[in-house]
Picture 1 (cartoon, rainbow, N blue to C red):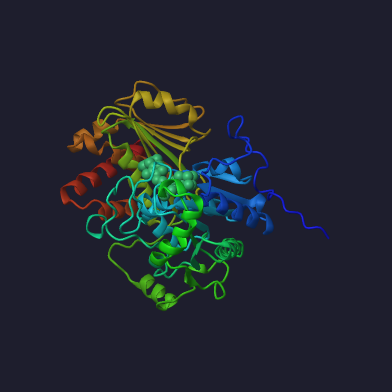
Picture 2 (picture 1 turned 90 degrees about the vertical axis):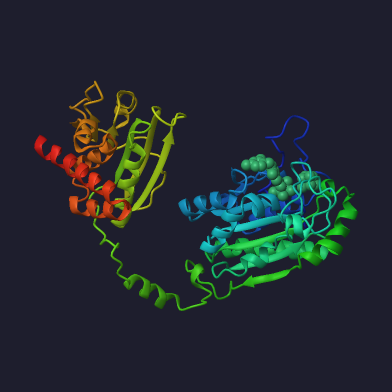
Length: 473
Ligand SMILES: Cc1ncc(C[n+]2csc(CCOP(=O)(O)OP(=O)(O)O)c2C)c(N)n1
Ligand code: SF4
């Protein structure tokens, strides 16, 4: 039977997103490692039969245009954030096969925190780390992996330990963590290494397909342009020099022991179950019992900057969190520090939160007229709207919405501080919706507000808001 060699179907046959005249070739320089690795990933995706489920997360760096080439789901993330973006995609779509593809500047400089924490959480993703010891895209500056003595545009006399520190070795660092399943370093220096790299890429994807957790494949790759070498010289440099500093090999592999869905429990430096039970049994004075939630809340809090609408959202989100629910809080600031508009979205849900921004709230609090004008129509039918009636001149549509008109700022003034108008509103929301009991919320405020005088004023404000709603019947 004839063997047919062709481009994998998970690679576009023509790169339509590129400009006219460049639809057949990649944008990479001759001899660049990115092209090789792209091809290996595309072949693996196809051979493993996951093309329809694959999502490729491109970084900022020379491979920023990954979406030109991969006929898969594609995301282009902000610099260094690929592992965080991949985490979000995977968690929201557990059936997807998510690849975080990153250079050394992206992964080991600006993105170090995301990288370490995604690995430490044992996210079920595959990370492909292209280490060419330089910032290729921006013209050859020093990278965290640049070697001692290596000349770059920012180390014209060579990197030194004293001025710049030693090259960062990511496999060695990540292998100290208990959660990752597979950590390996491979190279593209010769055909034997390329075969090993191919195998490692497949293995990383296979581990994810089986739900066994986090894989990290570091690939030593040539950058002839940044290194000022021709492609054969660059390959030699890779095997003769880079490998000494970055030894190839498997740094961690617990894939045989890993169980699907329990990947971050597989290597046990201590008895995880016993430790967890012990921590759960600790009763600190600050712990609160969970309370059930009758209805998911999607809230928007809006007003002038300085009125405390963001803090109001934060308080309610914290109460929801203490009560044991899924919560999110996303602020949106106007450009001015004070006097500008501000709003935030808060979700408090029994299940997973799909998107943190709230476009159609079932609870809206408006502390000024522009916010009432802007957001009233976005509230779902039958939703709640809380209006600071001392500030807003308009009246919401009471036929469509459940409206509470409350002079929150005036009430706060009487208590002694207009700043606690937001907590007056918090009291009103809890009283009207019945979402959380007064004692429970006040207990949470006692935990989160540390200064006694502030706490006392806030507790008074909460009670006043609650009372005002009770009096309205
Ligand atoms: C927030 C931010 N900071 C800096 C940059 C500039 N920048 C673009 S790519 C890059 C480094 C790329 O190097 P690397 O991750 O090693 O990838 P390579 O280009 O070598 O593949 C930098 C610093 C940017 N785009 N965004
Ligand atoms: S600059 Fe280096 S990393 Fe970038 S495309 Fe060229 S060879 Fe590849």
